Length: 384
Image (cartoon, rainbow, N blue to C red; front, top):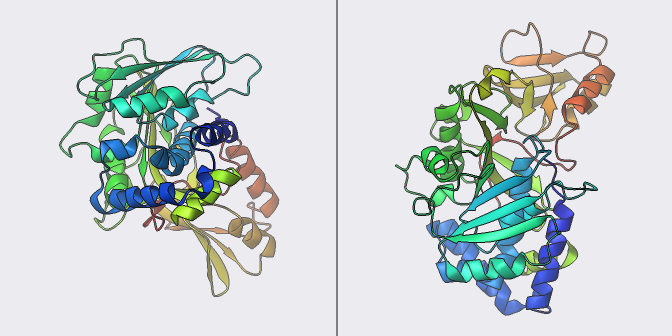
């Protein structure tokens, strides 16, 4: 499902400017946003009233838009009306991604957004933010939380942005979401890219990967056990470009945080009887940066049978350039007949650079057009 991220961020930017003219250079707002960022990083929780503030929305809102949009890319587009339940909707930024999903179509299908949120202040801010949306988008609120709001049987999609990591570790998140939206065919979860939050989503994926009624849309191109869960110190995270409008970028710099990139973890699932039957092994996914070594370049990838490397020797210049030009999240065709952990590419050996890149381009037609990562074993180094 494609999302007009630029349109969603422009909507957020215009709203903030209407509510707090000159917000991009507002030192007091930046100070409040910085304090919220520190609280989130150090205590993993933010006060409810802080989360319902313009300062919080100006810094964290773009993250929610970009993260949800990233997780929606592998989700099949809907040709009919959709009803999205946004759990822990906060001040409405995550709902913007859904509101602008498919909105570039000449005749977009109706979108119903139901915001589930416990904070009255956050819901009021969301109500104001989500005004002036495209005509095909309707918004309603359900005050309450994941386990307290009554079931919404008409929902087709359920989403939770930066929520799962705040829930009790013993909670069965998938069961709670299924109770809330029993008919939802799609579940989209996004969270920060740090170790505990990312591993929680990876663990959830591993508990669901063998179920016949679940298909994994992403980030994994396979249904094997997650190799990043084999050692406690590892985790898998995504890294994406935010492409913020000028004022939002200026505010992020004023806060003292990265205005260009962000780390996140995400999981997109499909549900339904026999859903897993149509899922095959969809190649490999790049999970890190190319490593220049003596006489060769090696690129870490993940796919069926775990973590592996794509390798090209420096004497095959065209192939080296092709491998080095790949970004995290790019998909690769799976090699055939490779033994061991390394797939060695050689020009003229049936894996020439032209055919290799043509196959990659075909596999990534629906991937983000920016250097955005899919899962990478390691740690996120940008603060929320």
